[in-house]
Image (tube, rainbow, N blue to C red; front, top):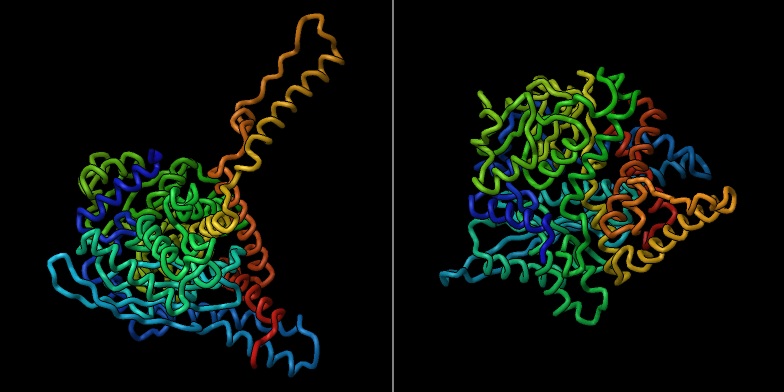
Length: 549
């Protein structure tokens, strides 16, 4: 039987498909704004400012250039040999890291259910091979283009390095609106795209491992795994490791659906509990009495809202493509989720008011935390001036332009960057990939041993006390605490995944904070995160050596 979490997931997935709304990991997202694309962003940009008007890929490159310029002098100092040789090698490797290694474009026909033929366009970009396999999602969206997949692939490289996940970056997409296709048509498109990827060396457990993204989910990943295993991967015992984000029955892992949102929560937790950073932005540490606004009630936005709510923060607004709701007293995430499942929209939610004014203006309300969880470049130089939040956690990829980033820092707003804070998804995908290669679920080999060991521990304590104090009054009962009793049975796969994700986000945050202090970056956490990533990628290339150069 499906778990309660999975039943709710597929229920919301149905809402997104039935309501004609393109989904973020199969849940409704603001990305479905009519006409929204990488060239037609619904948020105003300053076309005369290259740092605001840059394309998504150019924007990622600008962030990289900034971090590389800060990092280069230190890299030169760390190298051995004559200064001129060191400078040439450092500059050469930094130039190697920046561009996208390769992009595959493919066009293929499908026959629709009505008998008509349609040509389908798709792309897959592999940004870096400093670690293999490369890793990145596949999205189904009408505005997918080569620039977008290149940008997301490069961001994936830096994201993996930032949280010490040993993958290179990749991304793929098919230019369709999935709500306009039947399930059978989507299956044909997915399986054909899988064959095209595999034939051209863009799919395999040790080559390139996709995952869910916008418009795709566990079902599509299951189709990809099955197609690969039945065709080019039929000799490979690890064939199911060619993709992550699969259903549990197909080798998936518990906790993957909520992973990105849970990672966003842990990322915010690390900074909001820092007295240093909260002192700079001017609010007390901790989640208590903090307010937040979610832009995009998709899979990531929904789970982020849920975990922040549990931590004691209060959601006062949710911004969606078809309407926004506002309640300064707080919005319960589970009640909103139930309303969405039943009514296929968040509008009309009885425990909040429809926001009065332009939808995007909700981002400008007073709050402590703003979570953009929708489209790229939603915070620009123009609207950044109106944001009143003290913390911005980039749950979406690339929501802030370089020009807007400067404005936010000048306003003493802490921006927790996308390459760190939304890395929960790829982190848990890494755990799933390892599970598939090991062919055993986490905890299976140790579950009973841990449970028995804990009971033996309690028994040993009891006997020690009885030897010391005697048993004149009878046996001395040893009662475990409530917290220990919950853990006595051993760690489940979900427990291990949640623990591993929390540890990953904590360790990465500490690295980023340390670099921010070393480079005297103040609130420029993004540059610190990029420096962390680029230095690791540089060391990988430098220590491995350069082939055929």
